[in-house]
Every structure is written in structure tokens, then in C-alpha cells.
View 1 (tube, helix red, strand yellow):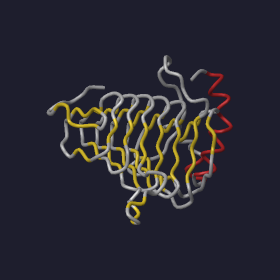
View 2 (cartoon, rainbow, N blue to C red; view 1 turned 90 degrees about the vertical axis):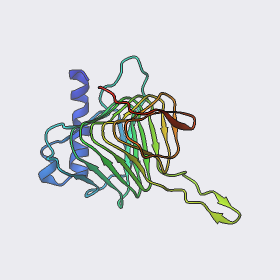
View 3 (cartoon, rainbow, N blue to C red; view 1 turned 120 degrees about the vertical axis):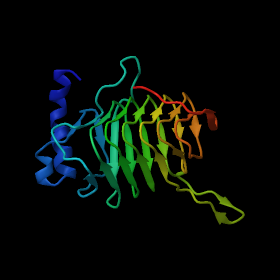
View 4 (cartoon, helix red, strand yellow; view 1 turned 180 degrees about the horizontal axis):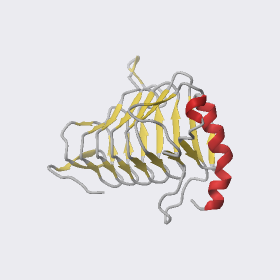
Length: 220
């Protein structure tokens, strides 16, 4: 982000901080919000900080990303009155993101980095551990959006998503309801995760995803 973009982002940064945070937190300006971010519904007492004292621009929203990747025209953030978004440390979410949390809870661990066009749609619970990295175009959805009825019985269309610590999600990955990815794992390019992977240190990939290799680790 160049100097001109930072200047353009000042109004939305100030508005967002004072709209969603209590005054004593808002004056610290913990959020830096890109001027290209569009706001849906916003409420106070939805955003919380755990094990983390909010400080100047420690959480960056809609800022930067890989120069060779086209981003969505706008970033978007919207949350309902009964939702909760919890930050536990430095967070860097790049240009073109979309976060919508109507009723559920999103937990974002410390030192989280998401490249361009990340989408999080939360209706139940999405938990992201510490030191996680997302490539471009990563989608997380913990619900189907609509209800499927089988033989007159409604299927459960909302299930939590859990991502452990030190997980690398490569580009163009979809992580759907009921999924779990354990610590020190990698999800390969263009995979679709549909279930729980309980073992740590796994390379996961495919459509649908499966374990491709055990006893791996990765270096940022």
C-alpha cells in the first residue's frame, strides 16, 4: 500500500474502529481498513480481543497481496448483532476479502496471513489457529446456505470448521462445513475439504481431499 492509498484509507479506518469498538479501544486504531472495503451491517460488542492488547494498525484488512493476482474490485465485511469475531494477535488479510458472520463465531489466531480474495462465510463457528497462512482465493463456509430435505427430514446445514496451528492452505481451496485440519498440515492447490483430518503433519489434497502424505511439515 503506497502513501496515497493510506491517505485514502484514513476515513474508513477511523469509521470502522469507532463503529465497532469501544472508545478506549477505538482511539488506539487497531484496525487499518482499505478504502476499497464496503461495509454491511456493523455492531459494537461483536469484535473481541483475546490474549492480545489492540495496538496501532495490528489488524490490516484489505491491504496488499500478490501483485500478479487480480483481486476482487471491493473487499466486504458484515456481521450480525448476535455474531462474534475474536482476534488473538497480528492479522493481515489482503485485498479483495469478504467476511460475513451473521450469527456464528469466528476465531482468528495470532500471526494470520491471508492472500487476496479470501472468503469467510460463518453461520456457526470457524476457528483458525495460530501462525496460519492462506493462499489466494481460499473459501471457508460452515453452512450450505440453504436447507436440503431428504425424505421429509431436514439435513443439518451448519457444522463447525476447525483449522489448527501452523497450517498452510494453498490457493483456490474450498473448506466446507464440518471440516477439520490439524496442526502443521498443508492443503494442496485447488482442493476441496469436506471432512475431519484428525492427524497432524499431513499433506492433504484432491477433490474431495484425502491424505496424500504423512509426517510432513512446512516452512514459511
